[in-house]
Amino acid sequence: MELLSDVVILTTGGFGRNKELLSKYTPAIKELPSTNGPWAQGEGVLIAEEIGASLVHMDQVHTRLALLESRPCLEDTHAVEERASIGSSASDGVR
Image (cartoon, rainbow, N blue to C red):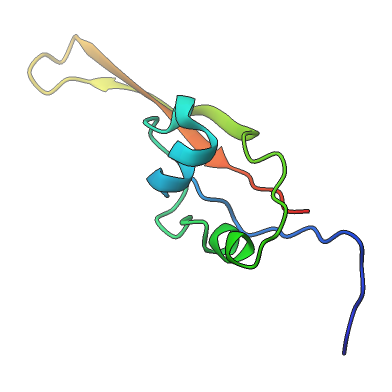
């Protein structure tokens, strides 16, 4: 089957765990912790780049507060430890 189109939208699952792609497209958030799984390496983006696709909106990355956890510290049962991490979930667009 052959499909012809002027526009193709490729959804690839993101590149939130690929530091090189984050550095290239979103350097301001490249060091943030990610909530993406280890599989979010941007293979689809790399393939699209390889074949010369026109990538758009690659700097549009969704970030969110990933974890806010309160629990007693082991050393002092009256103290409460709070931990927070910021996560990024890179969304990619291909045109």
